[in-house]
Length: 402
Ligand code: CS2
Ligand code: MG
Image (cartoon, rainbow, N blue to C red; front, top):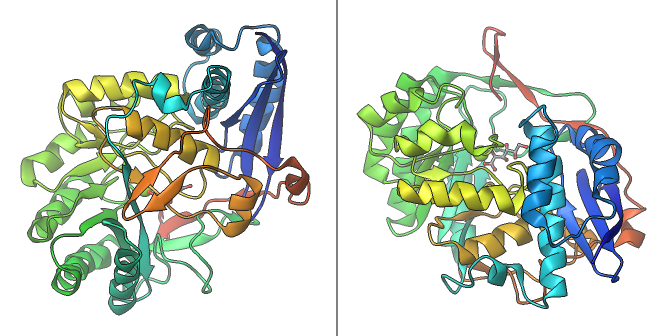
């Protein structure tokens, strides 16, 4: 089998997605996701200008060699753009191999280690009451794990809370909006949110919270300690992870489990975090972490240190990545949990897929390959529109981490 063509499809059904379609001389094609929220066209150009010419004529079954060629051959290694482009190729090749061998991708990864993939979704509210009601709605819908985010009183805009009554979508068309942040008000508010949540929804549901890189290590230690009575499933991205040893300071003070890595793109970004057991879950995702091939190596390394996976799964990763993550999560032994933020109904029509949800778990389906398609007729109606993630400033105007 030979790769005879490949092309990048950028579309924007409610939000931008970058899709790579690789075609073979046997009529089998594969789909990969290269979506990088707010920097989509960088990945599209990297693929079109620098990667696709090198793919033509290669055997799509040579997944490992093509991965190594694109990684080592780039010379300028790592980074979200490079690794998202490599991921798009890698995932498309796994899709082709599954289709050619007439088996779902999870079977190529060792087969089923479990019957379903435990998922969590996003609850939020402008008030504690709204957040409690939102968590309850998802519990009633069958979710066993729910992330809870709430507007912080006295702060004009908070991460994870929708604006203007629309569903929460991180990227906004037009230039970056400016959010406001107050560490003091946040740290004084969040423990009370989870005290109320546990009192209202009980202790069985897994509750998660995303700090979104906004605290110093000692502030994160204070937060983790204050949340211990509410036994969160995890406290996510407590502090920017460039300073990996900062997580050692958090660990000294709290037993609240820690998840990080959605902005990572290589196992080297988490090398110390994993081997020193400074985290409990690695969130690096298949689309930004170099694809299934690199995430398999990362998960196997993490397993040596009893670190589990908890991959990122927000709406800015396409249904192709969600499908790949579910095949991956069904197969690997040290799976922890999979994020599942609902795509819009229009996005689901653009990317018809086999995966499904039932009673807290998701299932990738048994179609050969990934079990996801792209409706190219529909795509043409939703062309790319530049969009940005917000930026954040402290109350005094100092730039901070969004
Ligand atoms: C968040 C994301 O889902 C999460 O854990 O951190 O919504 C994140 O803000 C977006 O993916 C950024 O594009
Ligand atoms: Mg996050």
